[in-house]
Length: 501
Image (cartoon, rainbow, N blue to C red; front, side, top):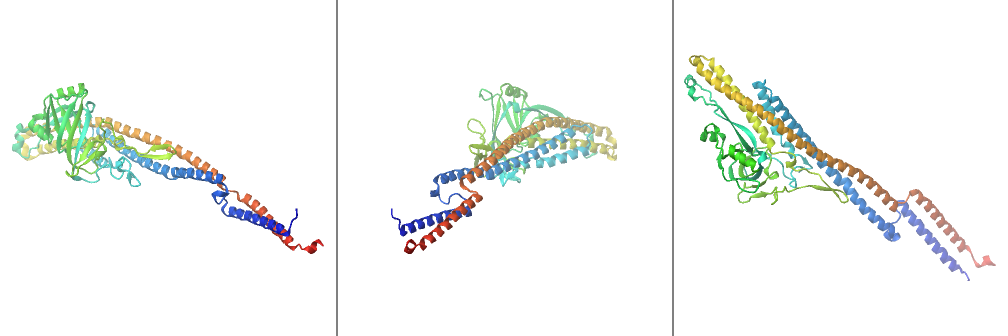
């Protein structure tokens, strides 16, 4: 085969161009440190790169966004539980102190002040938020758990169901002593009331100062309505005492005291409710809520009827009576979600507020009772009561009886409160354990995702990247080949016909 100069020049040009393409490709690799610049260069590398990048993008979302957000939410929850636990522990400590018999009036006043301050803090932790989202209000993260200010006109219609197990014994007192202001009043000892104590079973509603009772039903375990009872409603205990002296009630009566939120049972109806394992269904209306009280929509089926033309209905239970769950779930890994929230009723018992309010009222009653005794003793030493010492002493004895009853009631209430707050604290501890377990699970997931992220980064780098040292070696070889091809071409161009003669 005859080789012509043109053939040699064409081959040389092709080789130079090929070497130049290699040099250019390696130059691009050197500047980008990537194996390929476009998918057509190596479709297998390109397809695998897309798959790895997609997986890594998901992992980055979990590790850099979802997991930190979930962790922040649970840390806010954990802090609120700790603070609430501290408040309840302090309330319990005040109750323990209150059971001591040696307390002075000043000691009682101190306890009263401390309990008042703790009451104001009681549910404030329920408004804890994470990045502006309230953590204990289910899906309504833009709303607060408590009323943030006094709302005198806000009206709710609330439906509640109680079990016979919710009944408790409670003492009701009648015949409070009114201190005489003149000697003639002091001599009229016939006006000294007979201070009495009545004990009944009751159920206490979570709210006081009710506006109206819409319905009250007692239903036994077979679904039958208990009808052999008489229900009466009173605005206050004073109204009850005015109608039934000494705060007595018939065995088959059920009384509802609106200002305290008490449902009180006569002896026979109480036995009937307990033996029939009955439930107590009540529908009531309340207008006016105080700052710090829990909003009813997070606990009960209720309707906000503040604007009668635009009622807002809230459902807490479905038609089968099961609680509607409002879990906020974060996807923290592939096919793994984690519930980060706890709902208010899992931590904050509605009865806590009423328990503290009842303690405050009882402490104040004891203070008032002892104050009456001291004031009467001072009166006995005054000159204008010199001729009615025996009469004043009868007033003192009556006031002392009232004070003794008040002390006894306070001691019993403190003892019960200790047991109740132990249960409230236990409920918080269970919630704290639950959120702690979820936190541990999240930390393990975070460690696993961190390792997975590193592995994916390495696989992605191995698939796409090229070591600079390897590129330099290849680039040097290619550049030398390119220079050699240029030198070779220059030699070919110098050949003439005379070189063959």
